Image (cartoon, rainbow, N blue to C red; front, side):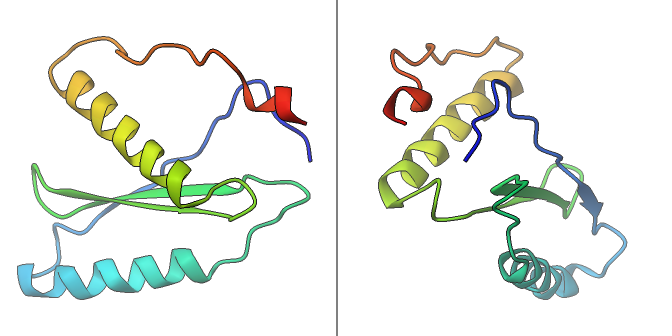
Amino acid sequence: MKIEPVLRIALPVEDLRGLEEEERPERVLIELRRQVGEPFDLAHGPVLRMKLLQLGEREHVLLRSMHNVVSDGWSAGLLNRELMVLYEAYREGRENPLKPLAVQYGVYL
């Protein structure tokens, strides 16, 4: 496995505002099933995928899937908390409030 010094992940955005409001939840489930069902290419990566669904002017759903080779329940919870901290900061126009990690993943390989 190769650890990239910088991870860049595509964040495709799909605008669902054109759908009737009652159709949107089903479409979110369809997109979620599609993303979860897509296999990961462990040889070339990435092993993390995200997609943003826009449901309304101020309503979005972030779909995120990771291969279990890079995540467990504890680390997924940590990622969720850090995403929320970043979301709140950026929404308020603040800089990234997260401190750099003391130890990087590559140290354990």
